[in-house]
Length: 169
Ligand SMILES: [Zn+2]
Image 1 (cartoon, helix red, strand yellow):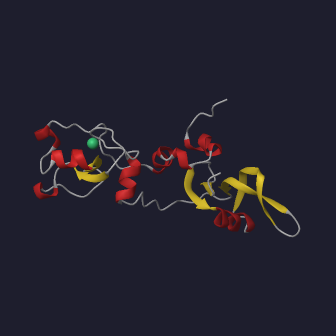
Image 2 (cartoon, rainbow, N blue to C red; image 1 turned 30 degrees about the horizontal axis):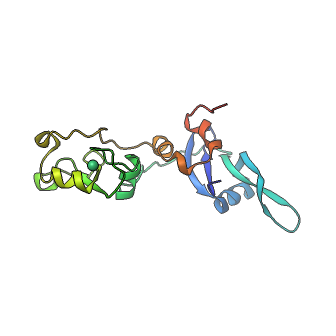
């Protein structure tokens, strides 16, 4: 159990992950309905036990003013599955500018990449071409769904069908 609830739009597309209290508010206000819940765990009140929601769906379609995933160190590392994009190490991670800042490289999803401090210092102030260090993946701006899927270990398996994953039998 993740303690988080997957929030779907009215058309079943995943739009966000919210906290259990927020999910209960949406359910209580009848703005959302339960799609999947955890029967074994629930919130007990004097009168009844409410099963914990795992996936809820909005009653009305909302046009989400989608701002995208914010560009932070942590989110760049998450996108890169917390491993160095040069050697695959998962230790001593830092953020590397593909084109170094000193050479005009910008701070963007397309120029930031996760690197271990060793690769980062080998690369130094040079471009990947200059040092023949080709990153394993091309840095990209993650979509919400790809971002959620990349963090699958934090998620409940009940969410998977809504994130385009086939459910294992
Ligand atoms: Zn490395």
